[in-house]
Image (cartoon, rainbow, N blue to C red; front, side):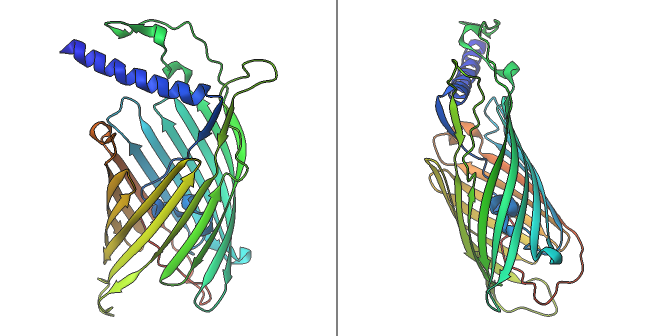
Length: 337
């Protein structure tokens, strides 16, 4: 039985090794960004035009553990801050994010965004946003495994004779977004990686040549509304709302369609989503005037479902106090998770 377990573990490691080799050594590779399940809990990352839509300062943190049953970790963490500034006639946001793939490939980002808020009518506002991002991508060579390290029965026990010279990649990137909303409806579109920067992680194979790896543009379209259930009461905050929403993401050949809704009663939120050909998602949340907490689980429906263990995601937001909103500032009823 121990031999079978060892073979299974070595098979998983070998598949992971082949996957990493494909990423690192391909002559033409297009990378993909991490996508959060609770995309509205990290709104500035979803679309920079969300910067300042809450008016008051807010701090948001997110943690995502994808496919925990695999031998390597796929963990993404982020923290962001945004607020509206009267002098700027808009909002600004700051995002710090770290993405770790199998403890081998690492990506760290720092973004700064600005969103100009323009009132079109008495009930409708449009935000226009630009975002600049500094990105560093690197590979931890000590965690790489190679074919000559494998013993037929004992697994990875030898040292490798292969040498990979992979230097960290540092680059600047730019994104843009637009968001239109009233007090009950919103629609937005964002384009990330406008310049499609090169992110090759290996040195030139020969003089005058180098592997070409690009960070493909990411297109995001989203829309939704909020429906009030029953009548509001001035004596209680136990109002009930239903918030259906749609999100579509395309990056290179990869595309993702999310359809779902949130039900909120008072401070409690329950959400149900379906990600096309990938997973069913359940979200539980607590949303108060100061603190917001959310947990979601992705039940994978693809062929990875049996082995992956799904995905876990946690969000935490702190909504800081600020001066009362001016009458001309319009808030939006966007889902919190």
